[in-house]
Image 1: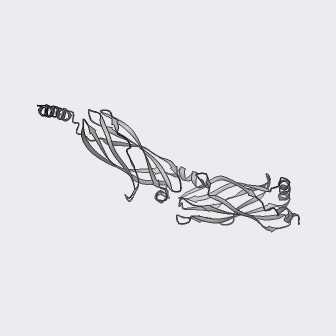
Image 2 (image 1 turned 120 degrees about the vertical axis):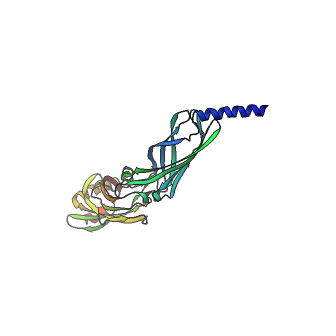
Image 3 (image 1 turned 135 degrees about the horizontal axis):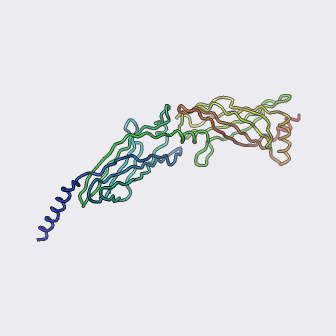
Length: 294
């Protein structure tokens, strides 16, 4: 008798579902947004938000959803999974967020040098239940992500996660003339993101103990690509001897001759021309005052 009642009840449910045409699969109706959450040399995190629609007359329990990011050649570069069961009311839609982790260097390779956009595909497979009856669904959508602002903020700052990518190795006095002295600042630049760019200039002013002393620029341009992790560079400054002596004397009284450099980095990267302010500071050789006075 119980089996008969169960079959009758099941039949009524099936008829009800059929009359309301509830054998419809849930669908992803829209890619709502894609945002870059973080970019580090190793990993990048992208948040993908999309709308999942329940076209049925009963609430839907979404119990599986696997999301993948494919590059333009349709190779997987990242993925994410639904962590918990989500209930979507009848004839409604819900926005779901997924954080997808990617390796940074493959993503950088995907950036177009024409418009700084990354072209990829967002694909997924899911499973939902209505009244205990399961339905599978899948989606496959192309998308373009504009990385121009992210790249413009990363490249000229020469820093990541609190680590400086622009590191001074030494400061030397090369030539002392009657009224002018040549100072060279040797540095190293790291390229952990595997970016391709040309560091073509750094016009700057140098201040010794907060007093203006002269101007300088890069000695040679530095070109980077994905295979160049770091390069050594040199900035050459022409110092006014009188102003340098005054600044050095002031610094020597305090026990340390500090200098600061303030200028603008000029970089060509992925079809962009980047011109951003940048500054750094270090200490002069302790014998510079003696060298100038002699």
